[in-house]
Amino acid sequence: MEKKIITISREFGSGGRTIGREVANRLGIPFYDKELVEKIALESGFAPTFVEEHGEHSPGRTRLSYAFSHQGVPGVMNGLSTADFLWSIQCSVIMQLAEQGPGVIVGRNADYILKDRKDCLNVFIHANDEFRADRIVRLYGESEKSPQTRLAEKDKRRQVNYQHYTGQIWGAAQNYDLCLDSSRLGVDQCVEIILSLLK
Image 1 (cartoon, rainbow, N blue to C red):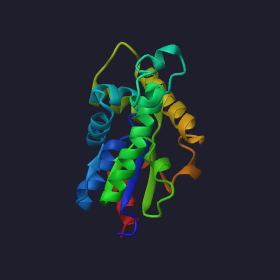
Image 2 (cartoon, rainbow, N blue to C red):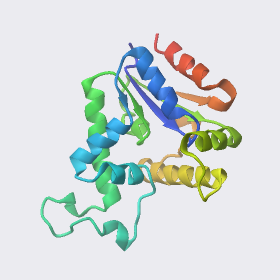
Image 3 (cartoon, one colour):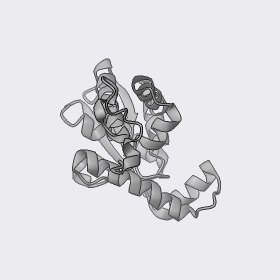
């Protein structure tokens, strides 16, 4: 396989995680999503729920963002904000996973972290709002916020995080090898298209 690492970046509700999992299953290679969160949690010392909530979100620059930085304590986070410390650990873990062998990595700015590797296929999955709103309600249920608000908030956090740490625009086609609209193509066809590029 010329491209042994597949990174899947995705709009919330677009089915990117489902697509990535099926690609991994079909190829018989590891799938890193929750597993990635657990590895970052193990390396950082933070709870997996904390890593999942904050690892892709907008980095804070307020006093609160430094509340857990243990400034002044030698060897602990090196005075970094919580977000910056998580970013450092995230980069290290993702690069280690890429060295270990083939795999599908979902989110966490993996496309940028592995940008210098020639064996990566970087994919961005997007979809129209109606498709995404319907999907998140089916998968995650209703909440006090409208589906549209949930989509906008989640995507905005990912966008700000990506721009902060990469200096690039999240979702811009030039940052990826392949951009797929799952609402037009369907989840199954997105899987087939990705697989066809790996043969």
